[in-house]
Image (tube, rainbow, N blue to C red; front, top):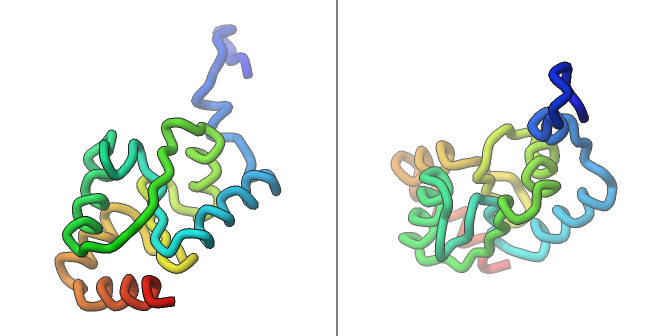
Amino acid sequence: MVNADRFHDHLFEEINMTLTPELKAKIDDLVTQNKIMVFMKGNKLMPQCGFSNNVVQILNILGVPYETCDVLEDPEIRQGIKEYSNWPTIPQVYVDGEFLGGSDVMIEMYNNKREELQQKIAVASAS
């Protein structure tokens, strides 16, 4: 898309992408094939932002296996996951196919509802 100044406006284009059936199926597969799935900037070995690092640290402390998808490597997933969950920010954590939340939700649960968080993860891991 070209804006009024005749420059290619990648940000505008990214925001206005739609979740295609193919992209939805790709995200569905990632979410359902992994008991705990984190869509984040970077990966669990090298988070690329503080919010993603927060989630990685919490999951590592809890000692649970999880998979990550680096949204920086795939602009379609980067935008599509926001539409998929109707949640505007990254990282996004899915447990047993359900959207749990982002960094703020994980921090809140870890600090104030740790037992509930551990139970959700234990149930997902056992199924």
